[in-house]
Length: 479
Image (cartoon, rainbow, N blue to C red; front, side, top):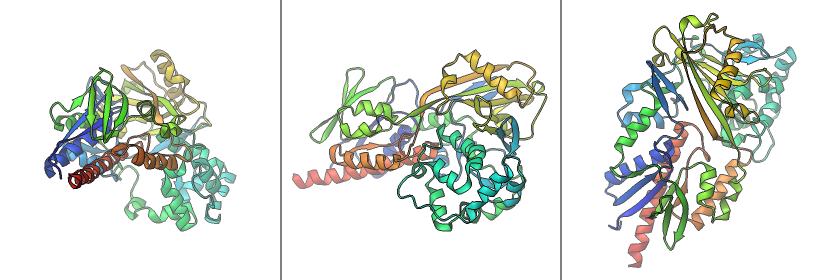
């Protein structure tokens, strides 16, 4: 490889960008690659939506609160930066679905709303007898003949019927994406369900066959939780990674105005009037910002109309005595068929006991979803009033919260609508030709969760190093 020092600029300091910079610098050190990596972030902190507040002994997540343990990249990163002993699993317990004013236990054995055990599904009050019979049609319906993408709603309604979709699957899946299940892309969100259907001819049969035996036999409340978090707060993960970055390699409070290609290099124009010359660039910004940075290139226009949903998290702290009607469980999601503004509530003191001092209660509620975002723009007092009214339909809260933390995330949940996967592939293919050495990653493209974003960062690192190595060989051959 050429001894000429290469420069990579990573734009966007969310978890994807932080991960990209960390692994790129690490790989360069370990492999003796002459490479400088600069991370640019427009705000005064790294981590994007990963933010933790500590108050009066509480640990309150303002954004995501955990990640799936089976997706190894996040726990591996935490261990690498010295937080392995801080990783904790969630406590398991009964979760519920709020439908038409009634709190129903989540049917045992359901995986993302798909039943794998017959008895809990037959006895649940979530569905009418007709709804249960309609869902049983999954056993005999032929495989989907749809070629290409389809919406989650279209896929699940065909297999299991409207009642199961609206009262169970939709509250669960829209809770993850804050989206409209009838517009969200199957292939970009849960392609495994399509694969299961194609292989087994039945979602129920297929998901049952994939359920680990120990999970089938686990007693409620005693099984190991499937989620992990960091006991000191997820923000401490970002801070630990930041500490590992090369001194002087992070520019905060600095925006990128545009990216300009000049011969085989890129000029990164900054908001402070300065410029950085780079050999490679990784764009990890939300698609709206990426659109502005690449405004001179029409190929990105197909993301111009990609929607994003605004949401807010509402954390409420109480003394234990304030809850007269305690419910044995970890929280509930809300069906659109209920007269509720909140979309879900986590009893955080039960699900994550480390977050809450003894004798206290921490509730974390969510508001805002596709088609119902106005609440996010209300004042703090108005949001708290609405949230407490909803909670009191279930919990009978007798006093005001000791404190509350409301965090608004405007246009923060990118919507992977039908055809999203193909659009991403098309843009990346054009970029490879028109902007070689520029790579896309982040929550707007191939996964919203923390591990998904970390995976995209690691993949971007591979592409950067491959490009630099190939380009260096070409320069050597020319000389």
